[in-house]
Image (tube, rainbow, N blue to C red; front, top):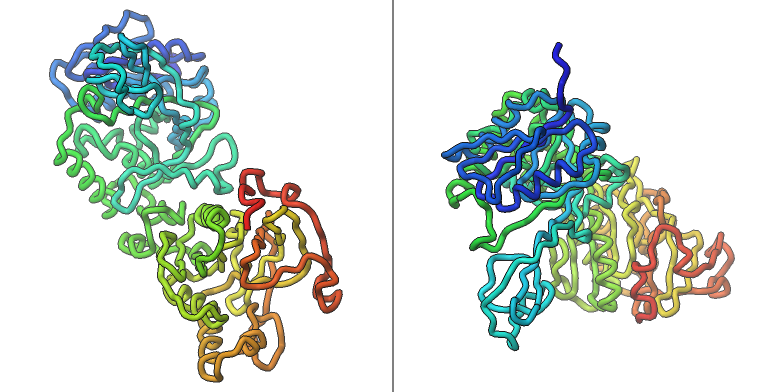
Amino acid sequence: MEKMKYDLSVLITARNEEFLKRTVEDVLDKRRGKTEVIVILDGAWANPPLEDHQDVTVLYHKESVGQRAAINEAAKLSKAKFIMKLDAHCILSEGFDVELMSKCDYDWTVIPTQYNLHAFNWKCNECGNEWYQGKKPTECLEPGESRKKNEKCKSQSFKRVMVWKPRWHRKTTTWRFDSDLHFQYWSAFKKRKEHEGDVVPTMSCLGACWFLHRDRYWDIGGMDEKHGSWGQMGTELACKSWLSGGKMMTSKKSWFAHLFRTQGGDFTFPYPQSGNQVANARKHSQNMWRKGTWKGQKHPLSWLIERFWPVPGWDKKELAKIGGSVPEDQDKGIIYYTRNKVNMKIGHECRKHIAASQLPIVSVSSKPMKFGKNHTLNTDGTYLEYFKKILMALEKSTAKIIFFCEDDVLYHKSHFDFVPPKKDVYYYNKNWWRVRTSDGHAVQYDTHLALAICGYRELLLDHYRKVVKKLETEGYSDSLARRIGFEPGTHNRDDRVDDFRAGEWRSAQPILDLRHGNNITESRWSKDQFRSERSCRNWRETTFDKIPGWKSEDFNFIGSK
């Protein structure tokens, strides 16, 4: 058997690509293994031209065959163990090839960490101002990326100044597609536990750079040219990788930086694409994956969505349309209720952490607000309103497992990992601290808090319907509301509405009950404020900066009221 000359072939398809020469040179400069470059010039010669190199193969087409066909052609020319598709306007990390080859199982498709490429600046020949890359300017702009017109300079003479480096603050490791199978970024996935480590799963990819075994590429059929030249490449590759029984993974130890050209003019995609072509590619993609017509798949599309659930852009109705359902232990949702009286800075920080859970949110507020699926209810500010808001949120939610979230509580992401083991028990997270926002003082003791409830929706619905009915039929009073109780299952008073009991769990990191002077319940900061020692067992005190699991930037509200 003939020994392979190369271990990796980097496949680059190019059409009117002015940065192709730089890209090829970067591959050759950054490789550390036996790596070659195969370039398909699809309908146009390189300008500037490529230099001859023993490890670079160039094939020219006078008439364009299209990006997908060109990738397949380049893959057929390769005799290496691995192939890597790379756009013609990218740079790579040093030793990218050795790193990727060392950590790629046969049935994996690996995506290097993505950065945006800062290729060049425009510079005014008259005043010397420089600004961020884009289409050829017609007027002088202010420095930086603001693109604000420079009123002091009337020059119409500009030149490019090459930069050619990654934008380190524009880092991406996770991607997805929505129910239309349209590519999307997915930064919130980084907060999930499975994103920890050097090689992590990703639902989809951009399509600009990907790496896999060459034989595996043909096992999954290569690029499907029925899509047309361009469009849906990331979705196609992701679905083929996952649904064939393999995986798509992101390498955090290697990276590529990609030039995005979205401004039109002379700074746009080099392959001409009409709206109809893009629509046809998406239609073909939807037929292939939503209807399950690809012969190589071992799993339906619903399996992939369930695998990454919850997925933004997908809800239970869309999942049901493709024959899927949310696993019961993952069918979680949040109810959020507020009087809209919390300090704006505190409220924003709390909502940011709740949203990071990626769970569907139903909010009920006194005033309309953009948070989850919002509903309004504004009655009289009594405890009855509090119960009615909870009940409305429960009725509007469709999740099986519900987490209660209040507007002045910082919920750590680990709080939402819990799955109630029983359907007839109200569960309370016992890992919490109460933090005084004026100075950051914090206390903790043994008790059950309504803000930390989790349970099955049907149990909670039944409870709060009974509570509201009892308060309305027997005549509302604050006293009756307190006797019924705010923490289901935690007392045996005669006014309780059911006999279900309370259970407990402790999240990996604590949640924080923020006390800001406008809370609906009173705050106690010393043991002598309680009726007895039994009410504040295991009393502890600390300061906000010593609470584990939280960062200093999470406490920008300290000093707020």
